[in-house]
Length: 231
Image (cartoon, rainbow, N blue to C red; front, side, top):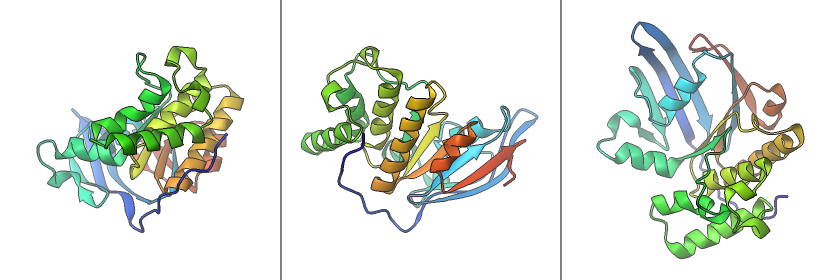
């Protein structure tokens, strides 16, 4: 399914660093001094029961939620130092997202969905076309490029979502239960694709999952309970 695609040399630094992150909602403490580092190109699985703080942690990493204390650093920049639209720009340039429910834009074709993040960051059209074409070939969907999401299977939609997450060459991809809506066969294909493309492009991957089998593509596994990383 995956064909050759020009690789991106991974940097030697950290894609993500969290230092003593705390977050509360009212009197409820959700994150309690979370420390985490992801190296460029590293794949890490995050596991834990519902209510352990995983979703809040992802929201803090991508800037949707503001931490109460501590520091989030991504691509060498601290969220606390960013002003105005700088955080939104950093999110667009440095983070890719893969969701359980795909979140493809229904009126755009597979090709256009992949292209969209590159348009948002102002990538030139010629470069955009080249990158999207390479990615859609690499996920084995070149013949489905003009299809709308409703005409694609669940596995095909998730492959498009993965390509979309990578088209702008982010430092980090956040994948939240990416196989949760798929059967075993399609889930296995999606996991293999995530691993291959993260290796090819040198992109760090933080994979949130309840499925122990999904952790096989990762370099290490960490667990979360009651707002703290326990392993």
